[in-house]
Image 1 (cartoon, rainbow, N blue to C red):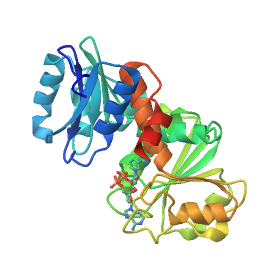
Image 2 (cartoon, rainbow, N blue to C red):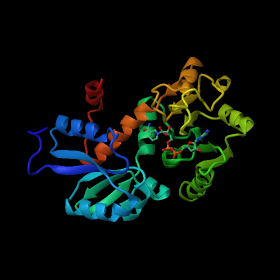
Image 3 (tube, rainbow, N blue to C red):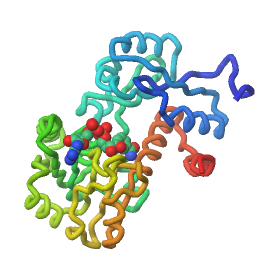
Image 4 (cartoon, rainbow, N blue to C red):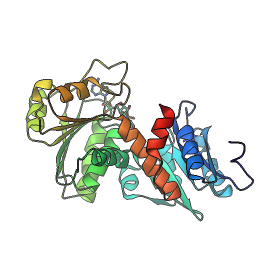
Length: 287
Ligand code: NAD
């Protein structure tokens, strides 16, 4: 590292709070070093009120790019110069790229998720999908599925504070992606869920259920699985959730959340430096 940092080294960073647990600095710095790119990536703990100053700093230091995490994703979308189509629909961004002073905000959770399906041989175009959840990850996935040509997106959520957000996503997608059928249902309506699973191609869990300490929970009854169903989870801790294990057992194509995490990093890296991230090498390095 000492040899790598010079008077020319460009800064990239993650902004939000907390950021101390983030794996992003390790992943991007490994990749810069691997690719011989003169950048360093750090993480800064900042709050929403400090974000205007963060943007002054990004401009002043001519930072090429970086990321925003909670609670700064929504305010970031208001402070960038331009937004990607998905970030505009959602009103939040987790990634920025600075092209000679013009800062574009992107939201890459959904892109990473769809990319991970693609890597696993699943094309979302023309597909009927179910997304369980209406929080940050779920919304990004729902919007990206619609932008990438899914035929149907059926959102199921419990009647909590996120339910209204699902209704909002449905309304925005009706305007921006009118060819995609979007419905919102109460997750408690098990008959409706069963019937929708029977008629769809891909079921996605984007809730916190299945994640530790809820790792004994799955929201889909295993008797509903069939071999031609794709089952995908956003949860990556544990790497194989109860939902994924049961789907595998039933012979479905089952895709866990870790790939989404890695693909999202790779999508960001390509936005920052225009190159494929050395993903395999990073995974070997981590192992
Ligand atoms: P969030 O807090 O924004 O949303 C939480 C969602 O879970 C809401 O839809 C809520 O209604 C639902 N939920 C909560 N308790 C529930 C219950 N008892 N039954 C049914 N639904 C319930 O969270 P988020 O940031 O969107 O994260 C959601 C999941 O996505 C997490 O498990 C997270 O690990 C995962 N995630 C994965 C990646 C990745 O790269 N793989 C990235 C982001 C998030």
